[in-house]
Length: 339
Image (cartoon, rainbow, N blue to C red; front, side, top):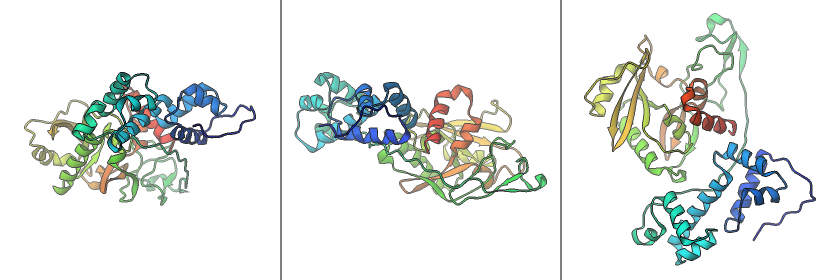
């Protein structure tokens, strides 16, 4: 059934609030025929406007979201009921059982026929919730330039209780203002991720490093993943203190030398942990570069199932991302704009 709505024929503009309404509309009508065209018509909006804004805010297309939700719900029904696969395929708007089985296998990693026989781990895709909040702002007061640790064109960046680290458009120091905070900015659950195996590996190595008292932060493209933006990780990027290179090598049982050819003040080596590639990075080689304050500069504290991680901030990535990572830059930009 379709939810009731009354329209007077007026053409409505699509807003951020509209996307949440569209998500709720999809949830109510998930087993009905759905398409960008029918959804846009229901909300008296253009297909292009709905499609573009949905992708910008949600990071995926409207139909991809619908497909993910259907395949997740279909798997839950397979577990909880005796429904036939052919009936499940038609219920979730697949033309044939074969096309449903192929889509199911691409999403979960195995065909629907395996679910009841082997009780495998299924991917979880919960409904999106769009929330737009804005609070606080810069706590700014004029100060003498000589009093500032980094040049900020005559302003000092103060601490607001809602933020853990701060940036200013006028800063001349790429990397913002050094600040260490233990305040949690984001809470995530592995159960909500499409890539639970990647999360389990990241949490395993993070937990082991913490037990060994080896300081680190989540860095590189992995910082995007660790802020809750799902994608397939090709490696886990971690940054350590400059002078702890040998200690980190011993932890990962790495026998070799770090690569120092990329740029001055940067070295790295690639290790393996539980079958996953771990890129171990070191920044510094100057006095004061081997402290917690330096290592944790421009990091957020992310809690994942009770484990606290220092994660490079989205703002730092947007300031420093290389053009070759345009795909990830766009993903981060969209994510940051929706916060």
